[in-house]
Amino acid sequence: MQPRSDVLAALRGRSVVLCVTGGISAYKAVEVCRRLVDAGAHVAPVLTDDAQQFVGATTFSALASEPARTSLFAGPEAIPHTRLGQGADLVVVAPATAKVIGKYAHGISDDLVTATLLATRAPVLVAPAMHTEMWEHPAVVDNLALLAARGVHVVPPESGRLAGGDVGAGRLAAPERIVAAAAEVLSRSGDLADLRVVVTAGGTREPIDPVRYIGNRSSGKMGYAIADAAAARGADVVLVTTVHRPVHPRVRVEAVVTADEMAAATLAAAESADVVVMAAAVADFRPKAAAPAKLKKADGVPEIVLEPTPDILRLLGERKRADQYLVGFAAETDDVQENAAAKLAAKRVDLMVGNDVRSEDSGFEVDTNRAVLLDADGGVEEFGLVTKVRLADLILDRVRTPHPRQGAPE
Ligand code: PMT
View 1: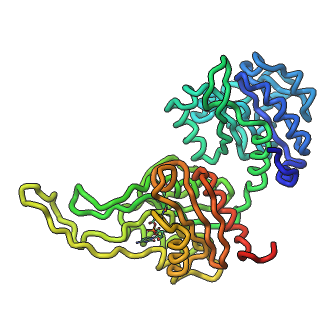
View 2 (view 1 turned 180 degrees about the vertical axis):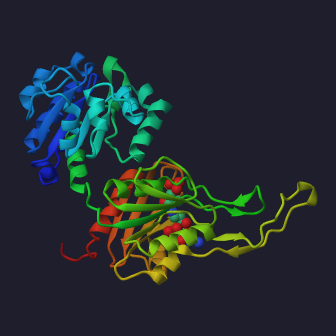
View 3 (view 1 turned 90 degrees about the vertical axis):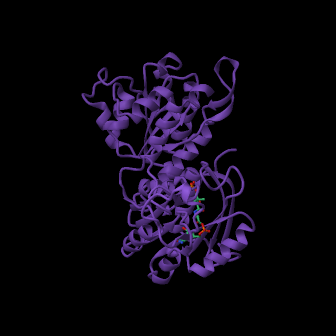
């Protein structure tokens, strides 16, 4: 599908450093370069030595806005990586090999591409391409997760024919997808810079005794995706969390365990926040009194009396300032929209994200989600299967520009 030209408008007049690394799909980077230039971007190509095994620098020099660079030392400039990095509005790495992803994740800068990546404060978009075995290797998965947590944008590869005739996941995303993603990153970069955002993540643990607790399956992935995305878009972010994962360096993390601790930290942070997103799975009940010592099997089956925990979202709704935007999540196993709408009204939130936690590819622990966004004005937007990273941006888009009233003229 061709991207609509208005989507590409964000590229007009922007400086894009296009880093090409050494995979067979480097030839497709030529098309990425051409499309970026056609969309009005100023494109500076940089090729690694490995990339030049597959495609020539002359091709990029002919198509781009300035001659292709291939070395930290060979050109006329003394320190080309700082000029490139500091001058960029966006750095795109396409294709990004397992090698460059690994070097970038671990701060190794031994060529012009990796030095430029470390010398930039501009958003970075990587489009990985490699064989399926490499794409699925835990080292690559972890390195990409680390980069994503630092706010690096990823255009995942597609499935299809790979070098050598193999078929599987790992083929470079189509050039039009990479260019559309570049435009999207540019259109969002810094758009939340004026906002203070509080996000909660993970499931609370309510102690039964010093070693056991009542908990739930929340991995924190959804909350972390929102915190990462908000920070990458310039917001000042506080993350109140029960779980620990790599996170964008500008996110301030407040570690909590129980619903009481999450309530105290979230309500305090919310006082000065513009946006609060309750993505955590807070236990609804806790043992009335946690045993001071480990319960012994020999003493028989314990009777545990439960009591309700504070409903943090409800408290946030009651205390909400007129200029504050409150986002809740509804974890539902059936009638997602109806149940989410009831929670939206009961807890006085501005946006409720109803998510289906019964299907295997949505809700707890997985990287994807199926969600419906309901706003207090009756706006309804349903999404099929999307990554949590993508859903995070869609939620933050509503924070910036609330959804129009359902049925109201655009
Ligand atoms: O962490 P992951 O593995 O990525 O999974 C993501 C998720 C499924 C946890 C997340 O997408 C999600 O749905 N979070 C909300 C889970 C939940 O507690 O839903 P609920 O329908 O029970 O509660 C509704 C809202 O009230 C939620 O925003 C919840 O944070 C809030 N709540 C609930 C109980 C309570 N005592 N205090 C609260 O603030």
